[in-house]
Length: 344
Ligand code: ACO
Image 1 (tube, protein in one colour):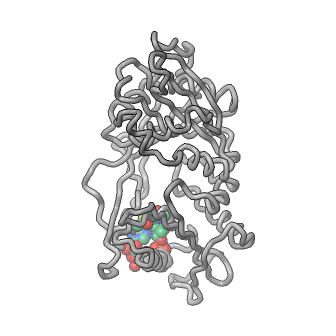
Image 2 (cartoon, protein in one colour):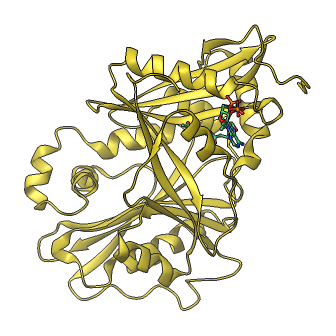
Image 3 (cartoon, rainbow, N blue to C red):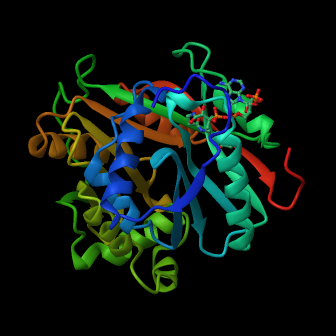
């Protein structure tokens, strides 16, 4: 695939990507593996997870996946994420083979993304880029330079903070898991949420614990938790959950979730943690996360690294993570451009 010219391949074409097209999907997986050095520290892509992602979109979201092909080979990839009813299409993947960069393939993929976003009726195209932190490892400036060259503008608002817990350096379970405070007890479950909690989990997740539990539940017509776990199962992911039940009301006061792919036994992803606002201030967030890490490690003893990301204004959650030994790694910032405006 090494190509010494700096020209756009003449036969560059865009092909929809489907999990049923073994040849193209296999080349796409190779592209992802060969580009994995782009994001230092990240878990290597898991083939089962990535092929599953082509078949199982997140709840209330459609995906539009394409590859760029030249000379019969996949040289780039594009994934547009289309949340239901939103004005924006999000670029989740816009990738060019590392040996074929700076010859216009990225620009061509971006033009294709704009065209697709317009066809999907979206008015803006957005992407999330990672930025280094003052004390963190340096990250390349290429993606931001590319986004700027494509006419996107960096959002001037708080972004996300990406933190990692390295269990080889810090064991937050060294003193065990603390007892639940009086009036609460812990429950655990695996990938599939028990029926009795499915609507409560959905309501907590969709309101982030801010709506009165009963009102939020009435608005959850179908269970978000069920749709989310269908995606997880379809992607071959295993999950572990710990919830906290409020004894007096019998309601779920909060829960936390971790998951992992089949392909990376050492990596765990810390997902949603939410404590209903009526139950905050009792240390339940930290308790849930410690108890759930303990649960996960009993099932997944090879795990060494835990990854999480939060809105960087969410100090309470970031403080809980710091108390567990999570360290900041990089931040995530949104870039946006209008779909209708002239291509730069
Ligand atoms: N440094 C500085 N400017 C750059 C760089 C870079 N490393 N890469 C691209 N640009 C800018 C330049 O202005 C370039 O024009 P020029 O070559 O005439 O100077 C312009 O972007 C277009 O470059 P292309 O050759 O079309 O881009 P390429 O095919 O190399 O792909 C991409 C760029 C997609 C960023 C590639 O490096 C890659 O796959 N990186 C990893 C994934 C990634 O970061 N994707 C970007 C997401 S941002 C978004 O989607 C808006």
